[in-house]
Image (tube, one colour):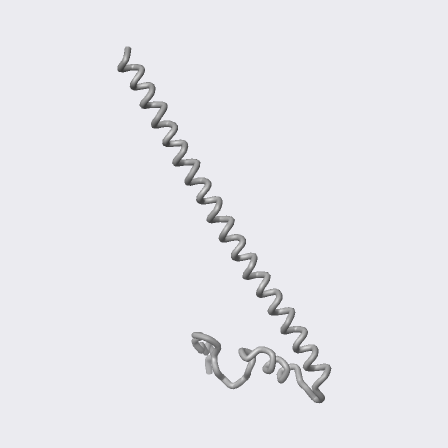
Length: 99
């Protein structure tokens, strides 16, 4: 009778530990997912703000600089928009033209 009581107590204890571990794991996953989502939202907000600032800068350049062209203003605002043949970052030139 005592052995049955001890077995039930050990079984209940192992169930509690199991559910505590499962609950902690679920909570950690929810926090990690929230952190990932908030990081991506922040990056998207920065990207949108940067694009808006660039649009305003190009608009001001076209408005206030005489004889300015869209390409010239874009090159002033965004150095990556230059047309000197340089590739941005670690891009690789690919040519699929056939003769």
